[in-house]
Amino acid sequence: MLWPLLLFIITMGILVTVHEFGHFFIARLCGVYVECFSIGFGKKIWSHKFSSGTEFVIAMIPLGGYVRMLNEDAKKTSNHDEKFAFNRKKFWQKMAIIFAGPFANFGLAAIIYWVIFLNGVMVYPVKVKDTIANTPASTLYIPHGAELKSIDNIKIKSWNDVNLALVSVLGKNSVSLSYIDTDNKGNPIEVTKSIDISHWNFDIEKESSITAFGLLPKTLEVYPIVSKIVPKSAAERAGLQVGDEIISYNNHLYTNWNDFSAEIKKANAMVLKIKRGNSEIYIDLIPTVQKNGEGVAGLYPSSEAVVKQYGFLEGLGKGIEQTVLTTKVTVGSLYQLITGVIGLKHLSGPITIAKNAGQTASYGFTPYLYFLAFISISLGVINLVPLPILDGGQLVFLLLEKIKGKALSEQTQERLFRIGFFLLILIMGIALFNDFLRL
Image: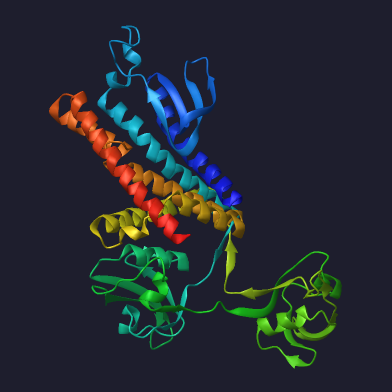
C-alpha cells in the first residue's frame, strides 16, 4: 500500500502544483499581489516567504491547494495597495486568472501526450474478429477482420479509443460506426452504419464497453520475419539478421509464433531453416538459459503493429488532438453522471486514484504518463463545474457581476459557498464510500 500512496502523493502534487501555478502566473501577469501559494490543505509542513511577499506553503492534506490573492478590504488594504487587489482588476483579467488553473491542467495533458508521441507510440489496425450475439454490434453485419475507423465521429487509432468512444455514447439512441470493407473489385471502401443503442447499458465497473457492445478484437497478426535482434543475444551469436524469415525449426514447419517461442523456452539447441533473400539457409541457435531455467533467443517477429515517432510540430498537434478528445469524453461522462445514465456508484475517490496510479506505474512509465494526463484533464473539467467553491462557480459569480453591474453581496456569496462546500463534501463522501467498497 506504501507504493500506491507515494505515487498518489506525487501525482496529486504534480497536478495541484500545475493547477495553482496557472492561477499564480496569470495573477502576477495581471499585477495582482499573491499572499500565499499553497500545495495541500491543513497544517503547514514547510513554508518559505519570497522577497516578493508571497508565502509558498506545503501543507499536510494533498487533496488540493489554493492561491490566496489580495482583495480590497479596509482593514487590510492601504490606498497604495488597492491597485494590486484582485477585485480591482478588469473583468477579463479576473476571468483569465480564474480560468488559468483548469487551463494549466489541460496544457499539462497536452504536453504529456506530446512527449509520448515524440518518443513513439504503437500504431496498429483496429480489427474486429467477430461480433457477440444479443448485443448492439450483432444487429448489423461487420465483416471478419474489418478495420474500425470511427465511432460517433471519434477517430479510432487504438482499442482504447474504441473504449472511450463507446463510454461517451451511453444514453444516446443511436451511434454511427464506420469500418473499412472492400467493394466488388476488391478495393477498400469506408462503410458507415447506424446502430440502435436506445436500450443498451452496462456496468462500467464489471464489464468492458467493447465486449458489452459486442465487438471481439482480432488478434494482432504476427509474421515469422525477424524485425529486431537484441545485441549480444543468442540470435546475434547464431548469425540471424533482421529480415530473415523462419520457415521451420528442428524439422517442424513454422505455424505460429507462440509455438516457436515455447520451443525456445525449453532452452534446447535448435536448427532453424531460414529464408534470406532468395536463398534458404540453416542456422544453429542455442538459447541463453535464464535463472528460471527458461531459454531466451533475443529476436522479435514482425507484425501489423509499428512504432511511429512523430516530429516536433506533428507530435504537438497530436498531443492537442488527444487532449481535446479526452476532454470531450470526460465532459460527456460527467454529463452522464449528472443525468443518471452512469450511476453514482461509479464515482471514484483518492483511494481508487492511488490504486490506479500504482497499477499504471507498474506497467511502465508511458502507461503512467497516460494516466497522469487523464487525471489532469479530469481535474480541469471538474474545476469548471459551477459549484461556488470551485473555479467554475467563481466564473459564474464574475458573469453575474458583469450582468448586474456589481458583485454579489458578501452574505449571498457566503451562503452559496456553504452550499457548494456541502455538495462537494457529499460528493467526496460518496466517492470515498465507493472506494472502500472496491477494496
